[in-house]
Amino acid sequence: MADSALAGTPFAALRATADVEVVEHNGTRLCRVSPRGDDPRAWITENVELVRAAMLDCGAVMIKQVPAEDDSQLGAIAEEIGGRTLDYTERSTPRSKVTGKVYTSTHYPADQSIPQHNESAYSVNWPDNLFFYCALAAETGGETPVADSAAVLAQLPEELVDRFATHGVVYTRAYHDAVGLPWQEVFQTGDRDEVEKYCAENGISTQWSGDMLRTRQLRPALVTHPVTGRTVWFNQAHLFHVNNLPKDVRDSMLSIFSEEDLPRHAYCGDGSPITDEEFDLITQAFDPPLLAEPWETGDVLMIDNILVSHGRRPFTGDRRILVAMTKRSAN
Image (cartoon, rainbow, N blue to C red):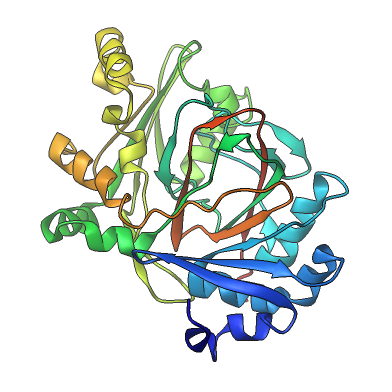
């Protein structure tokens, strides 16, 4: 971004103590910051308000080369910038707790991509912000791409947007022992009564068949950001949908399970199917605004979970990315 475009923005103030560049691609913007001086961690503390403002302006901020004394430092940074850190509840992907409320990124085969998504959009407890720390960059690849959620919305046909804006998205899950995550891991308890209590409090309907649990929840497909006022595409309809699986895996799943017993699936909120054409339009809408900034060991990526989606590209070699999730203060 040209210097003149930075005037009067949080980026102009940040440039007093850091080298700042705003990278843009088809509506997605990422602010890349390299603090000057020998203590990038202290720089973050000294510039909390400016970093927050940059996140709201761009949606994504990458601070370069922040050495970490230990894994807990990410949690401290997350709380300084984003507010209260969250446990990973109502899990949909496997990950491990590292320390406190710092987790590994999703465990997923290195040769595969993780599609773009807004974290936990299927839950009423989704985080406002995500904080990633690159403890070890991959030999090749492994970027965490971001895509502006308003730019994704703009790619979608009006009739599709109207349908999902009106009805929302229904997410269904069936929890099996051998396929997908068991309910004990998803809800972090082996107590059925605790599961029922959580689901009742969070708008999730439940059905038990022996020890197998089915859940169903209706969530919005679009949301309006509480600070910026921007309306964006915010859901995981494409990620939950059975079409998201590779064809051979999908065919195998559908040969084993009835539709209601698929580990994950999604419908339009009125209960009607999401058609193959709609699925393709939704997944393709993320591509034009996709921006993938390379990781270097020590980088911190901060994103507003409403304003931008994120994913993961395939990689080679070892890679270690940590994540913390936060909820902003109501004040």
